[in-house]
Length: 431
Image (cartoon, rainbow, N blue to C red):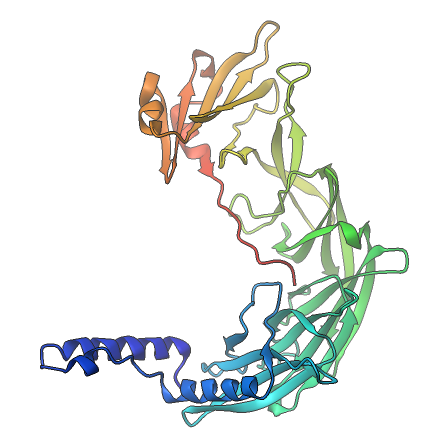
């Protein structure tokens, strides 16, 4: 069976043939005729059209990373893609319909059907949970009462089998015990609105609840789940919960088959999340620490102390940075900048400027200013007064100015090596 990529290639090849016909005296009718889809995709389209004609309507998942009404997924690992189509029949007793179509002899036919009583499919993921080589369907369902359930379906053999049904707020599939098989961490609310983490594993016959653990936050405070790694190489799940301007991060890991938590403590919440900040394969947690204030009533600026943890809960600071979210840049702070350095920021029609200064008994002594110029004359401004151009991007030019007081604090080479841009994060929501 041809994959979707191959189908696109076939269409492109057919277009080339048609265009090549110009030299061979092809008629206008031949020249402007649209290329036909491969036969197997025509049969899939026919099947979907028949469902719509019979009263079905598209019901694409509303959150997560898979949002299409029809999704092409290689469920059985044979290199060919199955088609998973999401529909709703409002008047049916079980209105939610998930059709799986499989290709056979250059045509798609219905392989199986999963039905549900909810009107909304919240999310869908495809993960091989039981290790049989088939990717199971992890279906998040939301009812009219905003109650969420997670349903795990196996479709191997053509007869859907439900492996798990449980209430949830968030979940993540992750190989927590490093045995090569994906496990499930399901976060839900208990009777006191606290967050409980349930750890499910495949025991050879069913999805079994291996252990449960109450976390330090409520479900309403849950903000993000981040899959990562501890300093000893163990898999971990970082659970960020935020309330107003404060955040608590629980680091979940598995030891001897039991789910355990390392609470990284409460931090000021700057909408920053755990990430491998230095590229060493270990996930770090950002801990905001205030700079000394340049003025008594001035704004508070924060440096980020990035900590990585081991399974015993011991932490090590591997990097400190300053992140200017508004300007879109960050700077790795050299050693010693955690003592006696203050920060100020100005902005105007031409862009913004952040100045790092050494604290003295008199006025702060400037060390470095980093500019984000956005005006029409940004290139000229970046080159004025011996400034150092750091980066040119669409609509913004970054430059820096080193002052006489920078000696012993930072030089141009270190500045260029330590300066970076903040990459915008694209997310389609939680599962």
